[in-house]
Length: 142
Image 1 (cartoon, rainbow, N blue to C red):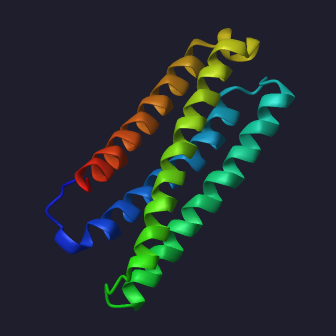
Image 2 (image 1 turned 45 degrees about the vertical axis):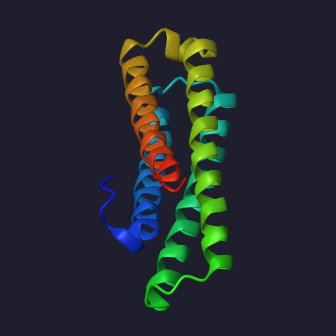
């Protein structure tokens, strides 16, 4: 993410959240499809992650629409709510990575499927990239 958007940086990071949460949602589906014999417990957890990540994506869209409707006039209360949401989205991705690490370590179906391991490692790196982008934005505000 570039940081020359000036007063629209907040909107830009919300765009990133929307995009990457959609990616994480799709990744839960990819994992379920790549590991057809995945343990039921992990299938259920992936479905829960799919719903939670989609909900976060939806909140990002709502904030984007709010900012656009306000003609980019963001009061301090709204800005603080958005910053808290950004922290939430960041932490959610960290927890998603923890879940992916657990899946790699604990699922017999994944351990016996080299392709699934490669896919999950790729997914983890993408979520790590998102975390880096958002963390850089937050650090730039200090």
